Length: 82
Image (cartoon, rainbow, N blue to C red):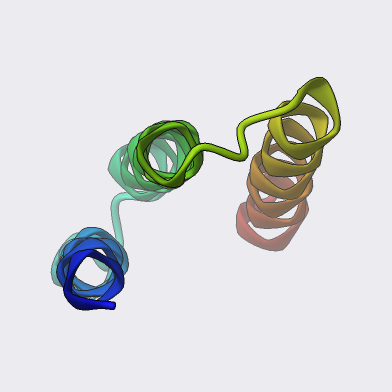
């Protein structure tokens, strides 16, 4: 149970830092997109590490994290526009 708390605090830090950085880069859409990609990558890597640590990392879970991160990046690209 304690490992879950630590893992989720790390996830909260990754996502929180991504959000704060995104808003700090207001007006610079290129930097905002890069921050979004890095945050999505951090989320994906966190998911792999978390599930490997608790012993339930499977292909299905990897695909799920890839798809969620990819959808977030695609939505960000559409929202920031050209």
